[in-house]
Image (cartoon, rainbow, N blue to C red; front, side, top):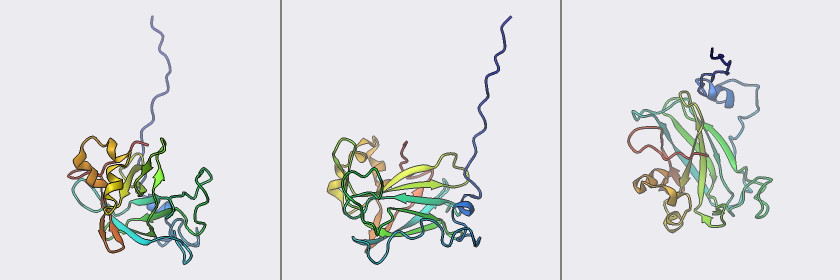
Length: 204
């Protein structure tokens, strides 16, 4: 007779919502007294070095409708290409630049906005320079694991064409989903979760 083994069963997966924006950005949701200001709201001050830019866009679902309860975090280097991190070996990052921000999408239209600086190029793990970019992390209801992607800058065509990560994208027509649209100092980067022109997401 075969013995029945009591293996533990896999537990059901859970999504990040629908209350992720309430927990991470309580002031935005009119829940006061948790933090003086929501963490990640301010990335720069009047002493921050570099070119000031605004990064904005929408998170869109497979039908093209805005996702109104997502939370986005960004990480990036400062204008000299240095990260505000203990593991940064290239020098000391700008102490007046946070290097990290968090923003919920607006409930009326799914828009997010970050005021930041344009990052400098940073080295890939093999020493090659990566094009200037900003790393995004997106969570919302229905997403089991936070999604990672990157935003690149349209005016950095030469650097983008040599970027080690962009070169690894097999279907070259999808590279454009990682390139922002520039108008003055504002960069628009829409994140499409599914469907036509789905954004390239990174397995990291």
